[in-house]
Length: 423
Image 1 (cartoon, rainbow, N blue to C red):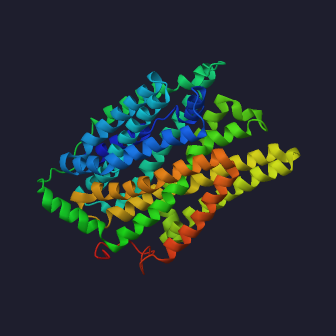
Image 2: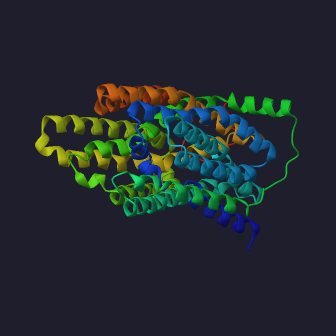
Image 3: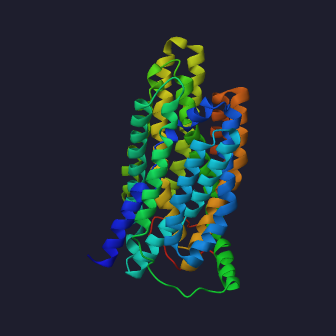
């Protein structure tokens, strides 16, 4: 088999196992079973983002200097360790430590897979295939995660009892799947062996790339999109738990696992279709659509919850309206990764690509961490509809401001041009 196709096969296998989070649909319930309230849950999630913020750039500098493959091996192992800590150290402190380890594991993985893919294609003069291959790999990643959610639902249902053991039983299988992911990375090869540059030269190039007009704009856009993507995701189980009083089916672990699986399986084909969507609608419309769609879905969720309070006879149907918004949110979730990665990879020098991407990622975590904490405190004090409405309102204002301030000619429909670096 040609080297390129062999490596692509292993990258696709790696994608299927990158985020095999069988326990994620049940972590809020697991934390609640051990005494955490909404504000403490928000703090535990914030610990995850703070750890990513602290470690994102250092781990990416190591990736650029030592190789992407090493990070792709270590990252899943650290994720597995984080899940083991959650399972064995069942206190508020232990949950914060476990989530922090998971944040570090994610920081190790935030750039290397896409960077390795781009360099692999570049080494075979096939950069033009990047958007197609990245979309396909991200679709496989979503498919693998969705399948693991289904596995988690089956495990939680099988071991369900009054003590919530079914929720805990999903955690160790997640750790085992993460270790299997690391074994796939061991089969990969670095596309090229570059002569390491001096740290000063490396830092100068990274700062120059970060100062590009286009990249600075993307950082602001990414902060807005990241917050709008992550806040509803961390609320999925909270919403299901709140709506259980109106729809008992939402309490079934098997249903929850199936729901999370279907959500990812809805996002996966959208990821694969990104090249077609770019041709059909253009990058500008897609960059507008992603945050606007998220804001609209959050507002619909808030209004349906408020309507259920006024018309309790319709509360069950309105609960399903909120759940339907989960599916709307999968559309931007499925599209955003390939679009943003393409934007970065066509503008950044290869030696600093992972570092620049991680600085963008870091910006998202830096701003979202206090937002997450504040929204969950507000949620506990004033209710979920208030927090959702605030997030939607601020989000649409921020989206409009960012998109109207984008550099002229950016996101044009023509193929990205490396000569247009927007300095």
